Structure formats: structure tokens, C-alpha cells
Length: 105
Image (cartoon, rainbow, N blue to C red; front, side, top):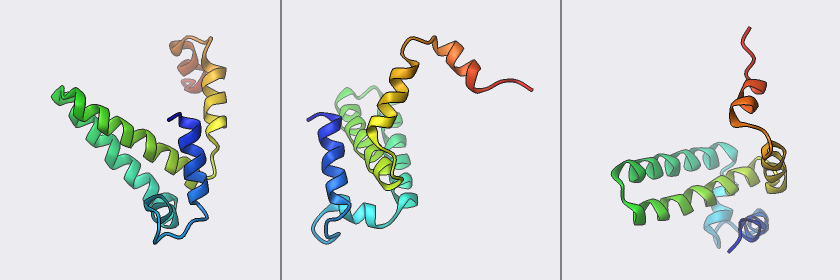
């Protein structure tokens, strides 16, 4: 499954009955709940990374990606916009890119 395909499925669930879909249920609770769930999954992934459990990290990473896409959908941010931002940054040094965002006073 590609991220595009997963995001399309998540967008379809925005109009689904929350009783019939976990994604629809989560989306119906609003952006705050979606963000909270994303944060929980990110912490779980961090824990597995620190523990060095590759299999558990793989599963948690999948959860993180899914919940990131749900959060984006809840906030009406299109995956294409996120990918375009990554594309924009592609030929820029990470150090230079960060300096461009955070200028010291």
C-alpha cells in the first residue's frame, strides 16, 4: 500500500459512519483527538526504537504513518502539500533549511 492510497482511504472515511469504521470514528472526534492519537503512537515508536526492537518498531512506525495521515485529513491538510514541501526542501542542505526557518533575533 502506498501513502497516497492510504490517504485516499482515510479521506473516504471522513464521510463514513463512525459506527462502521475506526478511521471515521477517530475523524469524528476532531483534529485535537487525532493529534493526541498521533502523539501517543509517536511515543510508542520512540520507545521501541530505544529498546532496539525492530519488529515492534516496524509496527509502531506503521501506526505513526497512519495516524499522521489521519491527523492531516482531520486538519484538511493534503498529503500532496506535505510531499510538495519535502520536494521543495530536497536540494537544500538540512542545516541551511533550518537556518532559513529560524532566524536568530
